Length: 94
Image (tube, rainbow, N blue to C red; front, top):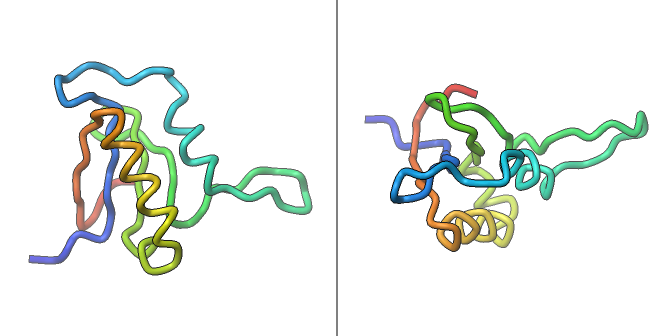
């Protein structure tokens, strides 16, 4: 079995309710984004918003834990503090 390389934070609470606000995934991913010389925002290669199984979600590459452990913990704590579902995927659809 391939070890999981991506963690998915789904926009569903542990009791199955949709997490609000509706743009939460973009906001959370924006924390790790950069703005280039063209003044356009670029998401981090480690943290990106996506729709996973029909639900707004955030994909976190596990490599982030090595690159920036504090950011990795922040993201997981966000999920925990808000009671969001967290999945580990070896080949998440992004």
